[in-house]
Length: 147
Image (cartoon, rainbow, N blue to C red; front, top):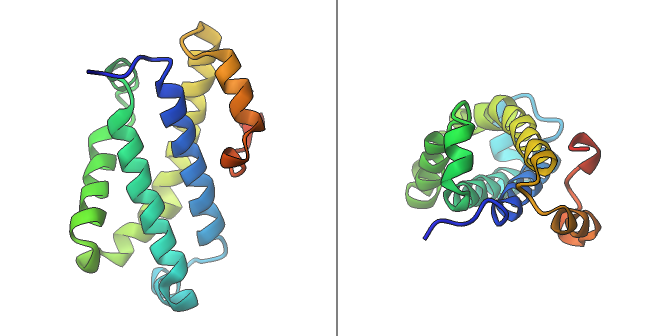
């Protein structure tokens, strides 16, 4: 059974929260090999966990959103999740770094746009969104970018 569009708000917000955490963990790094080794690989591993989480949330987003926003590479995001989950030791540090530094900022903008548009159209529950803004769980989301 596919989730309803209103339920997809939660998954979109979870993606934004994971992106916020990735940005926190990866700030200041401009070299993928230094990033990999930093803090005994804690920052790198924390980012991998968030990339995995993003892929999980993407699989839960309703098909209507995926079909409407075809410019978002839903399958690629899910494929990266599978690589992180099933080939963790063999993951390419450079691919992870490029994903974090180049693709995650684009996904952030896309997800903010999806939420903003769906709220304006009434496809996402405004009350649920307003409650999410007050939640400590979503403390790494800049909600001003959505409004």
